[in-house]
Length: 470
Image 1 (cartoon, helix red, strand yellow):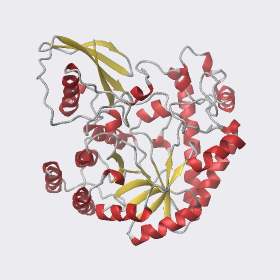
Image 2 (cartoon, rainbow, N blue to C red; image 1 turned 30 degrees about the vertical axis):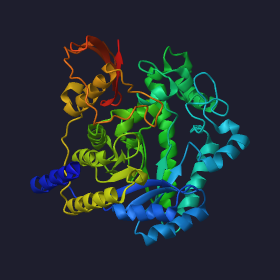
Image 3 (tube, one colour; image 1 turned 135 degrees about the vertical axis):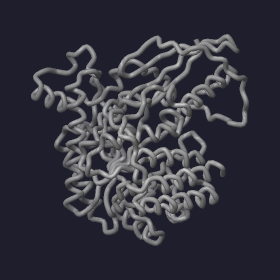
Image 4 (cartoon, rainbow, N blue to C red; image 1 turned 120 degrees about the vertical axis):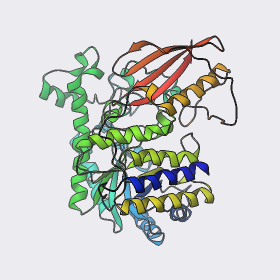
């Protein structure tokens, strides 16, 4: 409860101090993602959205008929519907048939292995090759069909990317992977023969001839451009149908380019909801601030910036208020929740509605904050809240507690009621650095143990960390 009232206090101060902020676009301000599957009671889900004060949903339904049914439910609850369109990773309802009928459409890694018969992290990752005309035609038809549904106000592009060449560092523990300093060829996708042929025709060489294709700037940019062409094709189809377009790209500009070959700043979007899921990256709400600030400084001028925040990916659901504060302070004009299921209690939904109503009033008055015109710091020691999270986990590890496990975010939930012996840390010594990683060593005089501390740097922001006992 204290955190909730602190959030309202922060934005009361913003109202008083900021009188010259630009008025935002009139898009819905509080969103969620929702998939229509048999396990979900749609009436109950929309009831919970209304109780929480949400304005809009990015909805994935299995068919046009299902969209029509869900739109009627949404209307009764005052919820605007955008279609959540799974693009280069076909939805489960279509996947098996496509694998059988069009195995040549699917992505290939640097080892020449197709996702048709090679598992990339999970069985559901069956991504299509963006360079193929047949794939582009399939996606254009899909968007056109959805845009023809009355009551669907727009579309949200998701999975418009390649498979992750690296994972968030904590999530990699789920797969027993160490992806600290290199991109492994079995997870480096985009090597479909059509992609390679198209690249070689333009640049005159095969990227596989390079010592490390993951660091070949032309090859990386080419793969980003193929994704951009696909995204903009779907944007064009939707815009011609009179629909708005948003997208759910990875957390931040630069991070998305490296990890999954997205460059959403070049997409013809009306809005964008980058997935700044704190519990996947740093476990600290300040990540929502840094990712949003990076996006604010780099996005296209015609695109309204939102921020996707997590409610059920490992951390306490009540941290949602701190995450939203952080995003709004850095330029977000709205928030999307992954997902409404994280607001499980009626009390939390009621508190969320008070927050949402107060922020809608702030936005209506044109008083949302203008963020600083500087990039987020990549010096972790300037981020007190992040260092507090890391040093708390040092205490857990020194006390022989596990911090990693196979879980939704690769981390063992932290019981904040448990106290650990205080640290007596020496100086952090930098022992390795490149464009993607900084590795430090630090000794705890109290326990006599030495730890390795890693900071991941993708997209000119701190996008992950890890600690290991030496």
